[in-house]
Image 1 (tube, helix red, strand yellow):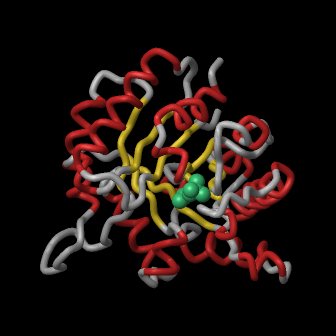
Image 2: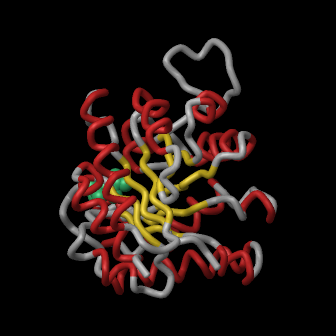
Image 3: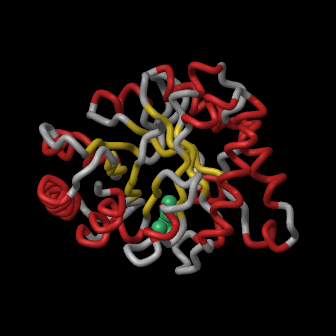
Length: 255
Ligand code: PEP
């Protein structure tokens, strides 16, 4: 059975104290309100990682993630942070390939595949993001784009390593725009991704891969999105900055 996951991406928001305050609200609400075996992941800026990891100890449902790492192990890479370093601060997950990093920091498929390897080498879980731009959707090229991102970013992995990867389908046109993919649009792409995994690996691995949806997800639209056969949870940007909204999204999976 694949895992149900709701992961928050705080992006470059919140100063140190604001992050700690938000996280303490999330942990307290999760303790009282989250009932099920869904996993909550909070991907904070690097500055919060260790403090919130300490606060999460004993919180069964909540784990910590980073939003990026560099692919080298250590050395003269001023300003960069390695997978081993985020692990030592308590991170268990790392978002990779987010469209903002692809667009603003020119991270291409080749670099991302090295980051995936670096994260897996530290036994961390990559949340690997893929998705098409508005222009790519309108010109009906979205399946080709997604296929290429999968092939170049993660399909080099052997079966056992691929089994540790979480995928997030994030149509770029839906991120931070208030435009959500309809449940049918999202399901169509999730099913396509699962089929590509079955072709590359096998049906069993495809069935076990967690595929999250991301793009203007909120407590209102999450129930219908998460009820689709191939959607296993969400990667949440804006709504993860409000504890009430974030936990309400997590509670969609309450049993
Ligand atoms: C994201 O940044 O991964 C995201 C999905 O953002 P938002 O929920 O704000 O669209």
